[in-house]
Image (cartoon, rainbow, N blue to C red):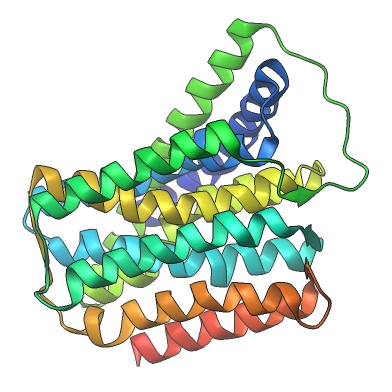
Length: 312
C-alpha cells in the first residue's frame, strides 16, 4: 500500500512540475529572445534529466551499475518509443531541415559514442566520461550561438511575460517537483517490483526508466496542449543527449560504470540505437517533414515489443 501511495504522489508532483517548468521555459525564451527549441533542449531537458542523473549517480555509488546504465538506456528508449509516440498521437509535429541537420545527428552521435565506449570492454571509464561531458559542452555552445528554430509552431499562443522572480520561482519549484516526484515514483515502483523478484536490469530498463521519463511525458504533453511544439520535440531530443553525455558522463567521472548483466549489451543498447535511428525516416514517411499519428503507432508498437522481449 505504501509503494502504491508513493507512485500516486510521484505522478502528481511530476505533472505539476512539468507545468511549472514549461511556464518558466517559455518565459525564458521570451526574455532572452532565444528560439524555443533551444530552451527546450537546454533548460527543460536538463531539469527533466535530473531524475536520471540522481538515480544513476546514487545507483553507481551504491554498487548497482546496471541500474545506472539501464535507467539511461531504458529512458532513451521510452522518450522516443513512448513519450514521443504519445505526443504525436495527440498532435502532429511539423519539422524543418534544421532539425534533421543538427539535432537528430547529435543525438545519434551521442548514442554511437556511448556504444563505442561501453560495448567492447563493458565499462565507461573516467576519461571517457570527461570526453562525453566535453562533447555536451561543445554542443550547447554551438546550440546557443548558431541554432535556429527547428520546429514549425501552428497557431502558437502569445504568452505574456512574467516577472523575473516568478520565472526563477517556477523554474526552481518545477525542477524540485520533478525530482521529488520521480524519487517517490521510483521508490514505489522498485519496491513493488522487488516483491515479485524482478531482476535489477529489467527493473531499470522498464519501471525505473519509465518513471524517470514521466517528467519528459508531462512536459511534452503540456507543451502540446499549450501549442508549444518546439519545446515538446526539443525537450525529448535534448533529454536523450543529456541522458547519454551528461548523466552517464558525470556518473562515470565520479565512479566508473561496469556492465553486470550482459543483456544490456546484447539487447537493450541495440533497441536504443534502432529507435533513435528510426526517427529520421519517420520524419519523411509517409508525409515529408512531419511526425503524425501513424508514426506514433509505429513507435508505440516498437516500445511495447521491446518491453515484451525484455521481460520475456
